[in-house]
Structures are given as structure tokens and as C-alpha cells.
Amino acid sequence: MILVVESPNADIVLRVDHFTGIGETRVVQSLEVHGGGKGANQALTVAKLGGRCVFISCVGRDEYGEMLKTSLIALGITGVEAVQNAPTGRAYIEVDKTGRNRILVVPGANHSLTVEVFEKKLGSLPVPEVVLLQNEMPFSTTLYAAKRLKELGALVIFDPAPVQGNLTEILPYVDYLTPNEVETQALLKQLGATGDLTSAAKTFLQQGVRKVILKLGEKGALLLSKDGTLKIPPFKVNAVDTTAAGDIFNGAFAVAIWEGKSEEEAALFASAAAAISVTRMGAQSSIPEKGEVEAFLKKLCLFIKSKRF
Image (cartoon, rainbow, N blue to C red):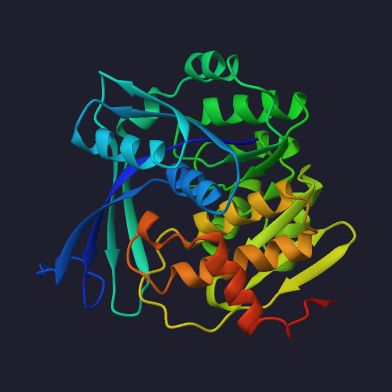
């Protein structure tokens, strides 16, 4: 089983020609509402790619909460709890003409996922083999979940987004830390360190992380451990919306590892899933099916070999 602990959100997507500047008022080209949230994105990715998924999370008792629960239940994902005291979390996403995005998150019911709620839910589940954590719920719960699940023997994958809380506390319980470039620099700042991506990853390893996957978008990814560095090449696609690409990468990587693939195979599979997703609008609506990813790899990537250096 793959356990996802985190946030479901309603994504309010605003399509614009260019990002809004300070003091600028603009008319958006379009507005769409999609299911989103880092946790829900990863849970749905796991389910669509063939993983057995349970999702511990909270939504509000409102129309967005019902929308999110319906989409999750349709894929057999359970564990979402509706709460009275807060609205469903929301993300306001500005997407420019090149597919880049800027995101503002309103946590809402995600902050109702306390340690007590998590422990109650966990008690009714079998021990998971793989766990996906993010950082959109209270950090105290994220930290507790990482420590508790690591003690149970689960493999912990942690996406440190957004960078909040004292993340140095959680690093010793993390098997795979998966920041993008912005999050990498923010983590370095927390640690009082500086350096390029490779030296940053080495800093995280020194803090107790077993392995680091640096998600570099159109530049591919790097998987670093104490044994060396594995370069995952990028796939050239026509990007229209990068929203949730990092979440889809994480979900796909978790499924591949859970299925017993090597790290190299898992990272290539995850990179392909993320590449497909950026060719589509939306977060959850952009998640590919497993057959699509396999066909994509077969068609485009049989000749690609990851480079070790």
C-alpha cells in the first residue's frame, strides 16, 4: 500500500498572458476550477498509475469538498475526512503563456489535519510500504507522520513544498527528499548554507536524508546519494501548464518504487509522467494513465541512457 498524507485543494486557475506586476490590474484570459492540492494530486497519480492508495486528509463540508471527495472515491481512494470548522483548502494559480505558474495557497481544512486526526486514521490501516508527504498541512503533523511511519518501516518520500517550519527536524526521517530549485535554495537558507545544486544535495545528505531527487523541470532531474549522482534527462514537449508536474513526478516515482523498479527506472518513469502532464491544462486533469506513460517511454526513450558522473 502507498499512503499519502496531506492536502486536497480546489485549484482556481487564472490564465494570463504574463504574470501580474506590482500595482497592475489585468483581465484574465480564462478561469477554471480543478481538483488540486499536493496531497490529492499525488494520491490520484498513484491510483491512476496502478498503485494501491490510501489518503489521509481533511476537506470542508462545502461544494469544493464534495467535488474532491467524488474524484478520489471514483478511483478507490479512501481516508478523506470532512470537517465543519473550515472551508476546503484552495489554491489560486496564475499561469502565463509559456506554461509557468505562480501559486497562492489558502490552507483551510488542511490545517484541521492534526496529529490526533492522523493517528486515529493511521490506527485503522495496515502498515504502508511507501509514504508520500508534503508540507501544506501543519508542520507538527508532517513531522510526527514522518517519524511515526519511519518507525513502522515505511519508505518516506517528502516534498518540502511550501518551505515552512523547521525542516531540519524532519530530514533524518526522510528516504527521498524531492525539492525543486526554488525549494532547494530555501532549504539551504534554513540551514545557513550556500552553494550550487550538487553541494546543496550533499548538505541535505549530511542532515540525515538518505537520498535527494532534485526536480529541475525542463532540465530533467538529479538523483543524489552518498554513492554518487544519477542524471535523469529531460523530455522535450510543448508545455502549456506546469501546475502539479512535481506532484505527478512524486506520485509516479512512488508507484514505480513500490512495484520494485530500480531507482533509475522509477525516475525515468516519473519524468515521463510529469512531461506528459505539462502538455495539458490543470492539475489533476493532467495526470496521465499508466498505459500513456509506458507508450511515451517506449516511443521516445528507448535510446536514452541515464548518465552517471
